Length: 308
Image (tube, rainbow, N blue to C red; front, side):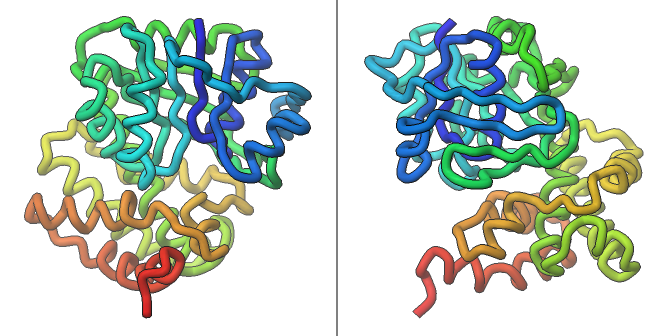
């Protein structure tokens, strides 16, 4: 099986390294300083579940023909990356998107076809410490997959086969991958936004009554939108998400929060911006998310050089 990792940030770098560690035929597709580091000194992952050092990694995709493409770019880069994915895939190849948000799979499907997209999400706290070095900071790394159509297909089996025997990764199959995506969205969009607004790690703002109330209100809005859209969220979705949130390491920060804090373009539009937009389309009020979005939008526009 030939595997391409398109986008070697924290997520792509971590899971791609685990695949290579397991002996899979993996090509890492990056650019800029990350590509330079991969070429010159390989890829390193520092992790509490076992470090990985790959002194040499493949970075040339050749003519394509990959059986599996692991898509690790940021959510706002998916529409552009979809064309690259199409050129990389073998005729029966599949792509596994691991972005935050709930729209990446459909954006890919519009270009490569729904049967060639495996619905997926990951749970991990990970980031690029420096070019060529990935730091896994917490949460047992986990990938959930499922067929977008709901019917069993070859894509899920291919992903499970790829990760079979890989250390530091658990792969599970969701009964309803769209519900699973919204369950993660219910967590990641509010946590990213409240973290970015407060400029504090999880352990600080979850202990402040007012900040926690804002987080919970934002979660309830996401759940309401999902249900209006026909997503089968559990009645206890918000309560269980809050319980999971309380188990997250106290020093954890979300990738969107870190990007905003460091003045980089972020996933604001794909996360809290999407909540506001999808809420408007569904006729669901989103005052908490609208406040968070308005508070963070100036920094996002400045990072993208859209302010005069």
